[in-house]
View 1 (cartoon, one colour):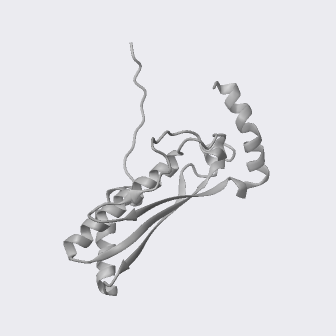
View 2 (cartoon, rainbow, N blue to C red):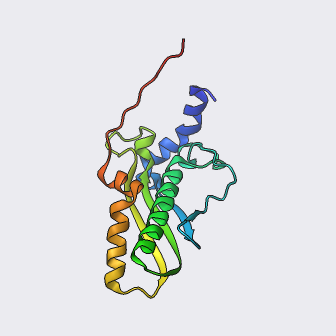
View 3 (cartoon, rainbow, N blue to C red):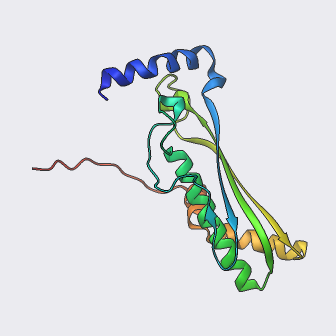
Length: 169
């Protein structure tokens, strides 16, 4: 696809987002399950993770959106971290699930509104656990999981990031 084709594909979306700003706000979700051991199985629905444009930006929907993949990485990291922390603290988790949701405004991504943010506005992480742990132990489990989940800490604190182009000779 060339630039012209892409512009033609996205033009109706951009026009719609100008007229209906709320249509550009999409909630993405990722889920995983906590099974035996220190693990979290992330439900991708695909055997091979192929990234592409989100349909809200003109994608076909046949490939994974990088936003979905970010949430899946958060689910995986948080699930594994929670399992590791629960194991370290001796907290028995019979079963459970992890869910991450994030809100995006695609007007920013498509350059429709220069004031609209590019990237997630907010992200929510939820653990649904089948456990007999006390409320105090669950508070400790959550606080420690939050503290040591690399992906969650990266999102919460932000990181210095840089992009560059290296031209091959």
